[in-house]
Length: 178
Image 1 (cartoon, one colour):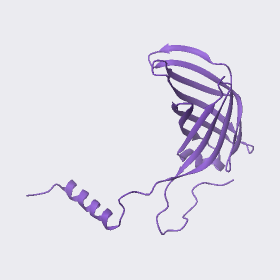
Image 2 (cartoon, rainbow, N blue to C red):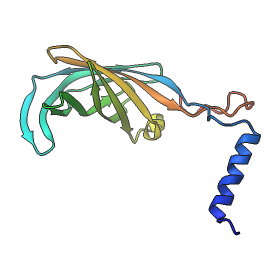
Image 3 (cartoon, one colour):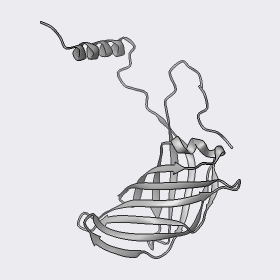
Image 4 (cartoon, rainbow, N blue to C red):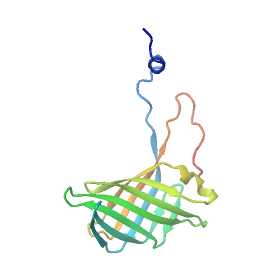
């Protein structure tokens, strides 16, 4: 009886994994990026559409403060949040602008579902500034909260870091520190 090449390869990988004792992969870690604080204008009701109940919250200003990045948030951008009144949930769809003291302009985008009183977000950054190129490939997550009157929101942000190979020391620093 002949075995499939795919099954043979899978058996080989399984045998190698067992031989090395790697039955559970090493988990990645999180590095604190900072806190994004935003002030918001009163919501504008877009209304119930095919995707749910959309509201727009204009960003009127704010700041970002962390160990490797500090910036102001000019009054540009907003959250085009989407709610489901029947299920009682909300999804953040925010876009904002960060401006650093050394003149870098950074685009930020946060999306994710509300979990009770907190929001879990996936965060993307874009910039052309040479000092912050590492943000273009950063995989970041955040936990957000807002005041009950929705006048401000804050997102604590972390960058996902790959696990270091066992027995390899600290390895190379991936992020440029300022």
